[in-house]
Length: 140
Ligand code: C5P
Image (cartoon, rainbow, N blue to C red):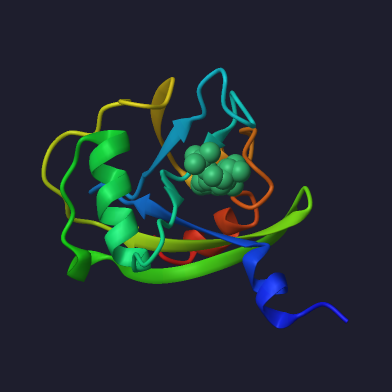
């Protein structure tokens, strides 16, 4: 039987955010060439580092990827997705955020796009992000 600690180590936790602007649009970023799933549109975010809380990881990722500052207290847990990923399993935790400092820039992505859920349905998105579209519609 698989030991529980081995099973847990195969789960990769990723945090991501639905940044919502005053018009009810959500920011997506396009994964750059050279990365897995290049060209797909995703909610900004990334992997947790060892010992990091999900909120701290998201504050760090948003600074690195978009150059914006977000208060951890403004991050509202919204929903999650669970997807097989090769020989591992991806757990994607999605937060919602309506307040930040700075103007988002594509510091790591190849492009940014403010999109409404209707438009998102027509975009190529990673398998874990796609099921979240319907769920964030309820937030807007
Ligand atoms: O961006 P990075 O490559 O560090 O992301 C780690 C993993 O999380 C990748 O497999 C990526 O596809 C996945 N991911 C995702 N949806 C996001 C952010 C990351 O599926 N919004």
